[in-house]
Image 1 (cartoon, helix red, strand yellow):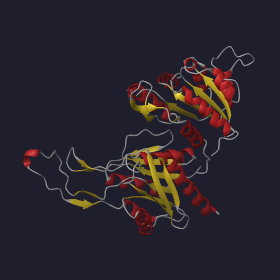
Image 2: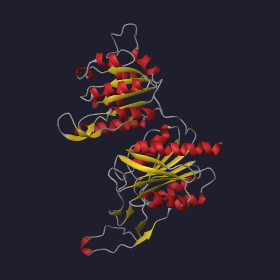
Image 3: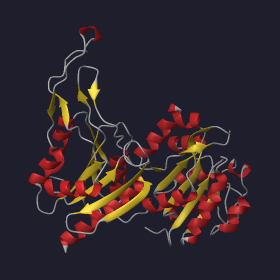
Image 4: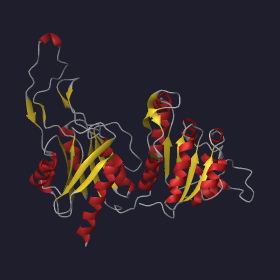
Length: 400
């Protein structure tokens, strides 16, 4: 979705990464957006307001006051905005926003808007990981604020860690995603995410390396496009307000949750890595080492995806995932046919930067009766958008 013609408030707070916000401003302008910059007083210690005034649609503002002819800039900007971006978003600004503080122009504008908000945190790793910062982000996510997490890399102090502001191109891409079309409004989407955990005893489990990132990205992207989303997940990842979260652990838990929501769902996306086998007789207590090496007998779990394909109602769209290491597309296509899927997302999890626990992915989306879509190595958010584009296309065709 293009930002062309949209009014975007670009908030810049006091971090060394403030210089990147100039490029964000320029890129938004190049795409046809009307950009109104707001700099906090601390931001001006890193970069001048005159720089933003030169490249933006209107003069950069730094204060609630001293604006001749504009006695209430925060309400003017907040009410007119189609989107507010805060890049970089410091720990201080995140705390003020989460607690409703309105002492500055930027935070007052954030409180005076009903437009979507995208915050792009940037800070040192220790600050990013601090429970207070993470709690504030959790509050903002629950309120529907979009969070573009920082990247790992070289930081201002010379160290390396997570906390680096994403590149301007990624921030603009995230902004476009927030302004995505509402082509899934009224559509009920069920998504599964994460790797199941199958009990060996009271403390040990058999599991896999799935982080749940791709499933969560799909759920968030579907919600952003207006869908009513239920997310069945094994992870403790935060979700945006409006997404119904169902926490599960084992394959049998997931089967129960999916079955409960199956019939009401228009689209089912099985992104979870469900165990194929589980211990047949898990011990009720912890197995002690002095008892010798235990023998663990496995039994198959229920094939949730196959079961969904067998009872799929007319018009319902079923999406599967195929994590492969060889003959990726061929194996995925066979899975699509065998399990009566409409779409299957195939990826080579042995490739660098692809699959489990990465922030990136590269996939091939195979359709039962449509084109094959190649998504090169990109963020899992990009993969989610590409998949939902394919889903939306099938939904439109089914109503014609």
